[in-house]
Image (cartoon, rainbow, N blue to C red; front, side, top):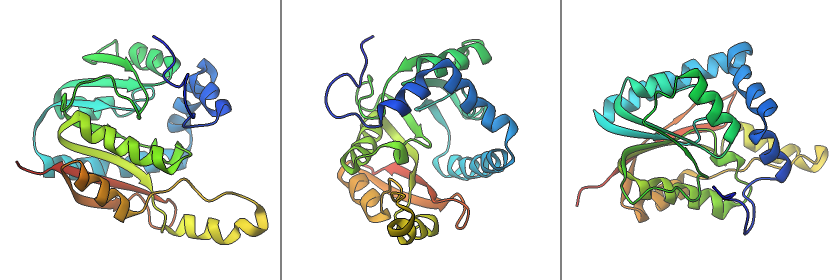
Length: 225
């Protein structure tokens, strides 16, 4: 398969893409959630939010998990859908995923979050966690949301870094002094607008942590008709 970032503006820096696609980078990312306390805590909070959202959506037949990484959330999704498709841009992540789960998913797809190689409304639910804030251009972050809605027949669960989160507000205030750029964010109003344009309604916006994280989990459901 050709490199999906080969033409046009790259959604992330080349250094970040190279690291994520490398065996060393993929293994390091996976081990973070196995060793680091704050990663373990956030993983537990994420699973609680997913459980709440699954209760709202109800049973689904199929889930696309993009980016799936090494399959950290695969067992959770397997409990809620008959078919789970694992998608990621990193060959190394997909290999770790397949090896760890004995190729148990229905499919393993190399894709970006901006161009998913599936037809419209191909799966009941699309999940995209911890990708939006890595996309460096705001139009790409909106396109990512549009692409998730295109492929989802019933619901979308995604995370985005909130523009008005405490973490980003402090980052913006400190930026003139420490030269650090603000986070790559979206506003809740943007998420609601793009969702509505795609025929979805935002059912819930849940911060992962109001103090320690700027990530927000969003649940979108397709409107009837």
